[in-house]
Length: 234
Image (cartoon, rainbow, N blue to C red; front, side, top):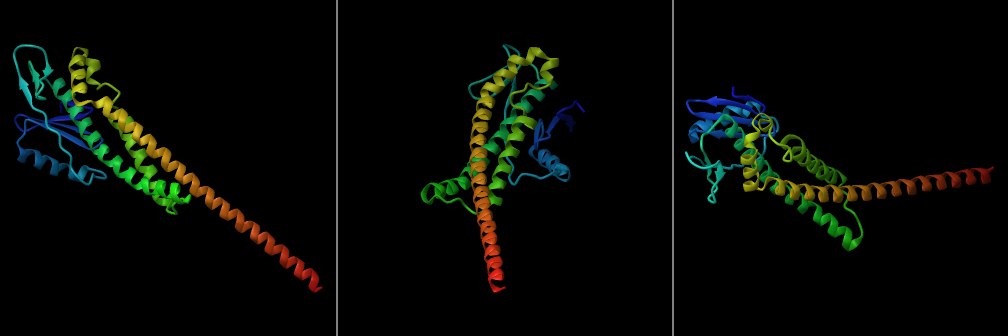
């Protein structure tokens, strides 16, 4: 084992595997067959697997001269490849993969909210499916938790506390993959989803409360009528 958090270990002669709790495995120095075998070996340890598999690749090139940098082609050039470099690159790749997954999920949630908002705007009535609205809120909260808690885009990887000289290299990686910008945009979209779903849920609750009050009033009136009839019958 090379690192405990994230879990990093060697596989085969030259392979390195980095596993992240939010469901991403970063593999380097392995053949496609070795990668597939390792992923299959992890299936029994995965909780709530995603429906589809996302993939992001990066090419690393060793160069004896110059600083560690990223070429316009996206190739990462390093003077030497250390475990710390692998962990930083793995962190960025894992983050960009999970962001891409969530960036596809949020528009699907918007597609579900739009018909509800249109119905409210056109006829002034809310949908009756409160359970579906609650599911939308739940999906938004899950993505928010993943970004702010497990992925922690705004926080620096722990390895930088031990190797502060690599901060410039990590900043270049962040800029190349636009991690902070993408996370900010996604967070704002999620806030809109959460607010919209909460408004719809509140409207449904208000309508239900109004109907319940009307039923209570009707029962009271019925009870009064029955009491009056009983009184007159005597």
